[in-house]
Length: 220
Length: 220
DNA sequence: TTATTTTGTTTGACTTGTCTAACATTTATA
DNA sequence: TATAAATGTTAGACAAGTCAAACAAAATAA
Image (cartoon, rainbow over all chains, first blue to last red; front, top):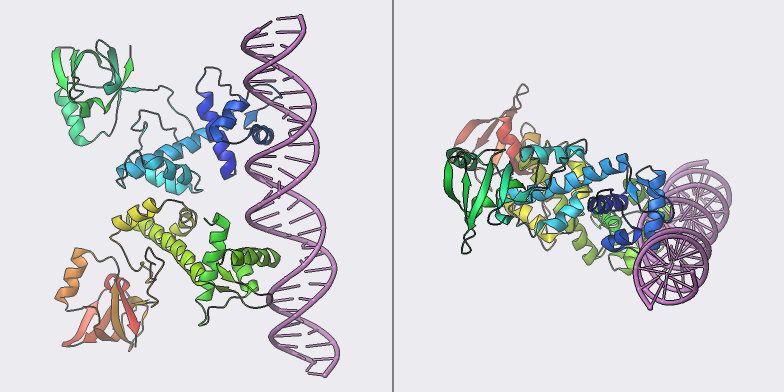
């Protein structure tokens, strides 16, 4: 069982290692991210190396082992589930939940997180469009973009839906919008951020910002 | 701000000090309760004394200061709110929640507990009949008994109601059962724990165990 | 009232996680 | 490529919280 502190190192390592392709992280970057001085980081890396969570060699960049990656993903899973729970079930705003989730993610109780998962309907992506790792620490590594963040003339493919309420799904059905569908953005209304899009037989459908915020896409 | 560990000492001290009238606690008892050796307890007591949370004198019994009592009550508040939340809002059983609550009670976020309080409808007693301290650490010091735990011929006064749902309150209304009412227990049915009680003009009303579990009483 | 048991304290050691100061290596730059 | 800057490591210190061993006081029993 990893300590609270170790978990924080793993999580930070995980975030930083996903910024470049090879997954390598500098001691210095980790130190800055965690607000912990470099010597402390070095010694913790040695410790995590003995636990086979990190590949460590003097003066070489850090890298999570497979097992380290899994542990980290599980912490991130707990963090994201907690954030979603706080927002969806307790009525917090997205700006308020990070600090609480930072603490709750370290709770030792598989049941607690399993219950959240269940109450949330086993979500696979969080409302930022970031994937939520599953119970085995596996996650889909596509980072989706919200449709609302795309620009005029972008060609995008619908990849996922946030907050799939009944009403919302019915709405998408009526508009014949479904996963895998490709659409072009004809224009973005500056006033209310609504979008006019084109797809299949629909030559100019207007989608409100509320809708665009809930559609996650891959850019072509 | 007290540490996680300090909070555990305060909580244990609070529980033990409510077992006798003068609120005094032995180092040995505290040591046993926390599963921490006596020398460690002694040194923590000295530390808490410098923080003005405990009255400490060598070889004398321990006692919480007013400020220590308040801190402890606030932790217990968080513990009880958490337990109730887990049961009422997440669907856990009462047997499953203690360990989770032991961890969540240390979360630093007034908003988080304020939200739970709100979602639970500002409960004043928990389903065990134990009082929940308010935001200032004040609590009503009556320890109620569930009607279901009383015996034949007991004379009891209705003191509080658990899980006051609309339906339940309507039911009580129909039966003319209200706070402050005194009733005698005529008999207890061994098969289903239902009770036959007598009060005012009602000479033999039968109350199911479900009802008796939700009525908190003071014994005469 | 003395002896024994129980309770409480002191001392010194250990672990985890942190720091600063000094030193070493790598990388960038002049 | 020599030097300066940035990055990383070693060494030693410290705080929090824990323990075991030895000692001290208080309570109980003989």
